[in-house]
Amino acid sequence: MKSLPDFLKPLEKLTRPFPSAAVAQAIERREESTPHLLRTLERVQQAPQEVAGDYMLHLYALHLLAQFRETRAYRPIVGLSRYPQIESLFGDTITESLGGVIASVCDGDEQPIRELIEDANADAYARSAGITALVARVLAGQAPREKLSHYFSELFASRLEREPSYVWDALVCACVDLRMKEQLEAIRQAYREGFADPFVQPLAEAGKEIASAPVASGGSYAENYALIDDTIAEMSGWCCFEPRSADAENEFGEELEDELLHGSPPVHVPAIPLRRPEPRIGRNEPCPCGSGRKYKKCCGGK
Image 1 (cartoon, rainbow, N blue to C red):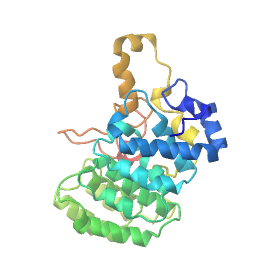
Image 2 (cartoon, one colour):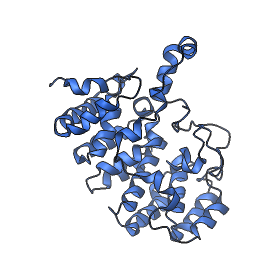
Image 3 (cartoon, helix red, strand yellow):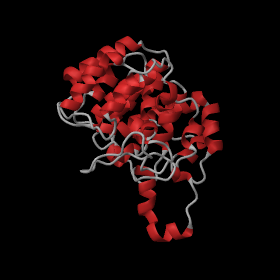
């Protein structure tokens, strides 16, 4: 097994501030970087339970390979996305950029994405990232809208388990964002059967938005379905790269470090919404992650 080259070693563990120079060098030396980044994903896929603490290279690999449009990363990434404990591997990346990553590396065969979406054993938010990926491909001109609408019809009719899940919410939101008027009756049925959560997307609001003019480019929702074009811009604002105060260091220690990397609500990065017994926040209300954006354009839109 080839050892990691020196120019990639700064990306192996969490460092502060964000290592912009090291990421830029990895991009500049793309041909050298790619085999090592692919091997990183393969190793994580083989032994996901070994990823812990401040290890970061697999997260850099996700975004760099997406920026490179490296189709060889497609199946390993989708395979990792079906890991039931994906939150321990990807943390907030699941709701922040995983859909864009998958869309960016897709080789044109959407079947692996569909298998992720329909995998009842996978994390609901990772499955929702699969829906995001399919929408992103349509908005990027990589797949026809009609084909996606047909698949969404199948999801509504039979391909999703008949029980409430965030996957249903993501499906409804995607139809609303793409103004899929043809799915309005299926959406109404999903609400009647109690599968879709009205606190995520109220039915009246869904009907009103779908009835509006078609949005060929994704309109104001396009940012929720963007491909990965700039790893530095995508990752540099993550909360885990911010300087830690002495008080925070003393009070929280390693627990805070683990939360920043693997799942608690940060200040500037939308977090994975936790499953709660109480109703979720409405789509037009401020996102509880603290990002300052509306829920539908933040955690609720991923």
